[in-house]
Every structure is written in C-alpha cells, then in structure tokens.
Length: 322
Image (cartoon, rainbow, N blue to C red; front, side):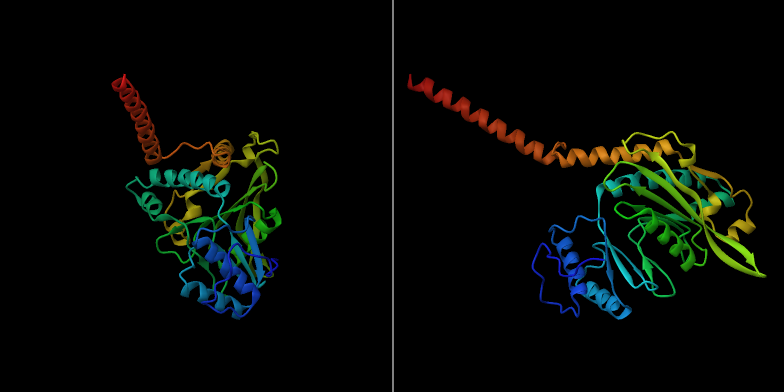
C-alpha cells in the first residue's frame, strides 16, 4: 500500500476538500497527470479505501474532470483502489497485439454468413471500465466486447511491476465477478527489473459439485515464456496464443451457429517482436535519439539558411569596402 504522506510533484490544490490523506494523495496524482507534471514511476499504486471513501474520490475526480486521466481498479471485496500508470513499454506491445487480433476478426467479418456477422459484432474496447453488480470496477488494458453484451468476452491485462500472483488474482476476479461471462483473460507478465516476459491464460469452467453447477477458474496457459531474461526470443510453441471465434461470441451464438471454432492465433514469435519493438522505441526516446518532427526539421533548415545568408552578406560587404 502507498504511504499517503509521500510528497507529490506539485502542491496540493485547495479548491476541493478531501476527507482523508489517501484521497488527497490520489487526487493530486490525477491533477499532476492533467497538468503534465511528473507522477510516480511505479506502474501500479494501491490504496485502502472503504466504499464511502471510494465514492467520495469518484465524485471529486468527476467534478474536476479527471476521471479519464488514469486507469483505475476498485475491488469492493478487498476495498483496494488501484492506480495504473501509463508506460510505453506497456502500451506499445499491447497496441500491436490488439491489431493482430482485430486484423483476424476483420478478415472473418468479410464472410457473408452468420460467422461473418458474429465477427463483425466484436469490437475492441479501450479506456472503458468493466463494472460489476457488487460495485467493483476494473479498467483492463484492453478488451473485446460484442455489440449487445453486458461484459467483454476477452480481457487483456499486462503486469509490469505487479507480480504473477497479482495477475492471477485479477484474472480470477474478472471471471468470478462476471459469473463466467468473461470467457478468456489473457495476461502478459513483463519483468519490471529484467527482460523476461511470459503469457498466461485463464478461462471459466463449470463443474458439477453435489448436483450443483459451480464456477471454477482454470489457468489453461501457465507462465509460458516468449522472451528470456537476456531479452532473447524463446522458441516456445506453448507460448503461442490460441483462441477461437467462439471465445468472443455469446452463448446464444455458440448454440445457434455452427463453425465458430475457427482458430485465432498469435504466435510467440509475434509476441516477442511486439515487445522487442516497444523496448527499442522506448530506448531511443530515453537516449534522446528519436527523429525530430517535420516542423522542427523545417525550422532548423530555415535557421541554417539564415545563417548561411548572413555569412554570404558579410562577405559581400567586405568586397564592397575593398
């Protein structure tokens, strides 16, 4: 948990009164984010808030127009509020991964049949909370949802500084709180102080216990590495992500339409390439070696031309004196 007395990058604003130091600390991070100030470098921060404090926080963030500045989770079972910080090493491979899934869905959507209709009904949902009946809400890194669905069917989470255990716990919460409506949780664990990266997948499973259907959460892919601790690719077919169109579909579609077991695959090689590209891009920016923008380049060109013109004019003036 975060120490609420930790200093923030800017003085706390006084235009909204917060009832606790924890709420004040959280609100200040949102304000700093909006104002372009530095924010904590951890990828995730956790605070203990009861429901009353959580609703107070939500009201302040809404009043100040800050709700969309950072991703958050709140679990009513544990009363833990979590802030998730933006990181390029986190977001860039996610974008490439999502593009791969969307590209395959778009191709399937070109079919002029019920299969194509199902594929066309699936959309990627970013920057959107998944809200549960118990008052909890989670903001996944991204998810895929049918047009008419209450919950996303496929959820993707990337854990950077969080442990594998935290990732597994969050996957279970997604599935249990949605009562199995979330059909797949895909988790990527990218080491915070190393280079290894792995894939895990969780799915709901209904089992008969004493004549009653009980929901269990099964980890079908367990910590399969696609990048080793040296940052090199791992040729691991078990780290290939295997989905099917029916993972994205509703129960009614699965029952009514045949042929929804069409494979949707993202290879471990592709997963490594997405991550490697993100790391190289982050390193270029960190070292200040990024290519300048077009506007900045034109400005520099104009400056050089002006300097060259000044030198030429100086030479002409010297010749006229002679």
